[in-house]
Image (cartoon, rainbow, N blue to C red; front, side):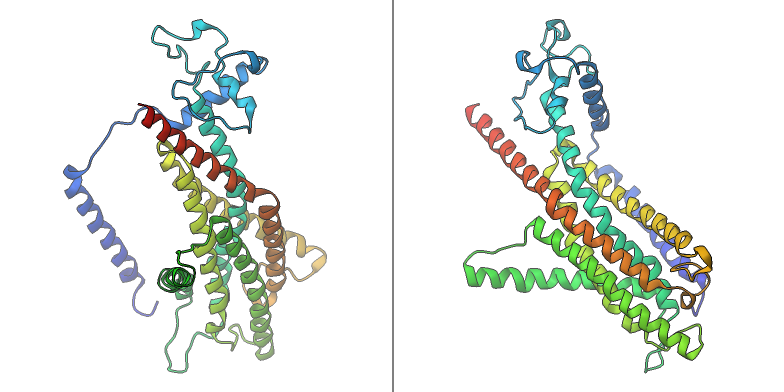
Length: 365
């Protein structure tokens, strides 16, 4: 910001070009396999086949299950996609003639597993909204804070975005270097936090982040109005706690949800895990933007001072918006613990049973 925007954009552009060149140079060493089918097409096939056979009675019909895949009790209506209504649906090799009318139990279970993950992803979206708020509204707070340190160094407001990453790195180091060895020394066994525990800590960190941000914003705005200045005399370093808590949200909840998606999906759907995770992040961003617009239009009615909007946060009541965000996170915490967390246990049990069944089949062979 003090030297040149051109140089600032030229450096990452050059790094990107170098990485592309390195990627192209090493293309001969890559193992490239031609894709066989599509996971998403298989999911649509299951829905189509189940819809076509929705009137059939599954209790007296045999199911197409060549791999002897374990069946779950949830969403049994989808199993109609694997019902062999007529032997003519199979060819001479015992395979379906039309994949849009007959699917395997494995395809059905893949769809069940994916649908079962949606409640956890929904809780993640609510949690990720806090992370998005700090990268947008939090930076606006930094712009209107005193960024000059006692040494005379000016902290660019954009640098506050590094705080969550630093907090994330500190936690990972502390967890691996101190937590795990200490628990092993005390109990004789290395104890790691479960997915449910980490997500809960992330949800609590999200609530704490919004509450802390509301108190800090009230202090920042009060000081700015008292001095009649656009920039508050409050130091930009006062914003570090809320940015650090945002980093803990990522360290606990985001990492745990990504691990949950990656480990519970079958190998044929592992790439879908990353897609679902980043879709959740983007949905959180869109929902946060929608929330900001709704709050702005609602609070400005009747000529009242809006909570958000305008050219200066000093004229708004951003602390009220943070209180609202904390309330949403509290509801999200209740939703996860009263409903969504059971799907983590169910998915882990299904995955364990599937692996045991696979090992048993291999032993029999």
